[in-house]
Image 1: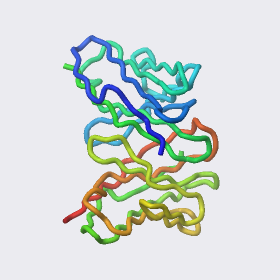
Image 2: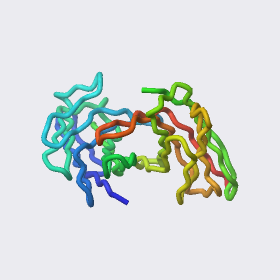
Image 3: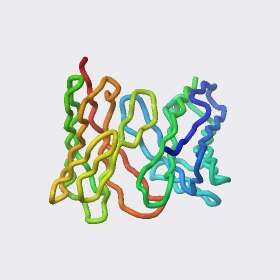
Length: 116
Length: 112
């Protein structure tokens, strides 16, 4: 099946710094990717929909200036957590749909961010 | 989005079948029923999806009630590797940008 890869799988940073997480579709083209965040013992929360070549669509309550999303190519979307703070520590997961109409969503392995 | 209701947790024994229920009484005619599962510290994994008819694949079976207000994910022989959180999600058909909204899911424990 289709594969979605995230990098890095884990990152530790100091408060106030910015962190970039990459999401790649390895064997298919993804015009749309989705970014989720998951806190411990909670479910996944959709943050934004990333569209290739256009601006991302953010869910209500998600700060677009803090979570910068870039989808410059059909195989790569990036999420940058700007000026990270300890409360941004979370498990960030991206996903992409392999083919229009199939219904199946492929998820990355997730990136665990710890802000000190 | 139409909502789904699942039990918080279920327990099973290895090698036995598992039936994971999901209620979706407000489902609309164009909503597909999706099931994903998430193992600890991993991204979710697609299990199965369907619209009206029962569906089978190598991982599981999906039984959909005739009125579509409920469905059941069936793992025919549970293994320890099936221990995960199972999410039942409704999503509209068509297009590449329709999103999946996750609920709390059911935590499945498999006993050896």
